[in-house]
Length: 557
Image (cartoon, rainbow, N blue to C red; front, side, top):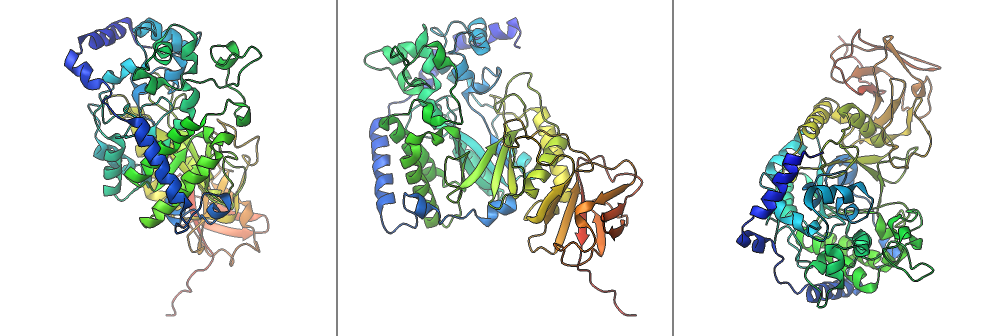
């Protein structure tokens, strides 16, 4: 919680901004409507051409295959950074919640900055200066963490694009930092040999500011004024989540403040065609400007109204990538797309067993928010390493989020966790990078427990009996990773029992990565018995045993 002195200083800072600076923060003139119409027409023409490799229908998109680079990469960094990092309160939904009466963010906004009619979300933009943003330094950190791809949020639900957009004047290149954040990160990421991606949450903007119409706020002023002020393009369309009620009410009703069932998006108010065109234009603009190797969509694309445009986007993205000799990854959630047309992503969750198709889970170093907020709690490196091992054993990737501060610095807590993960991967990465799943993903107490895809289920309490398997790319080496160190000096890997038909041959060698000590073993009917060193090689979250079944014979003397 910010102190009264800090709150007062923030208000003085706003008051003290020179008039010229405020004008510089205003959105420049832009014919967004014309640009959107031109982009949509371009996409329709491109996806209608019989010459492109992918057409805008599920049967054609079923030709897609998740590329090998993604299957080899295993670990990426997600970045939630935007104007919401300025208030840094509760979570990245602050721009919506500050307009919902009774929400803690609503109360915090009034107490800290004044009523929403006087100080709205748009007024945070001049405070979002990113003065310490150094994309090369960020990527250096991510390389040290062992990441192989980087995915900044190009635009969150708040309507502020973090790139030089021709579809909305409300973007970071035109105001706030006055920098093309996505473009700079793309350059820095590719300069270090990592793959680059983007994330779009634009779909949810349809209803993001809807509650701001229900009381005296700058949202209601913007959306009710004629002619519409420029603010309306930031806040609009400010529609409801729910369809009209019995009295025809659309927004500002108590029911509207309650989010409908996220598993039944067909029950949400569907967006209209102008908004669907806006979404398609902004999404494909990112493809044209930055040629991302990876594209992430948030959940609201599962609303049925998005389906035609979603097929068009996928066809455009895949075909454009092919023309640039790229192998793209497009993620979806739940049942938003057929499983063979893109790559499944599970937010803060997992799958309960080995999945034959590649998939990804995304989670965050911070527990309560994806963006940076004051007084958040942080995951430990141990828990994230264990999650990475568990995910990879089931044919998945881990996309780990970091929320930088508004000035462009990354918190010490997040930095420490990233470096600890990188240190572990430096020793044990051969069991992760370019690995492939074994026939059996693992064994141990945490197996098939509850609903693994439920949000928050990614945080598990593993122990030494929880063992996960991977193999080298060619299948010649098996890796058994124990998610803890046994206290009795021995470990039994039950899956690797004598005469296991899934093994190419009997086990002939066992090595502990990070240790030069010999690991004695005996392959018995109940499992592979390992005699461990007296002490663990280091205080780590997971210990990798390299198991060989095809050893070279000793040379003759």
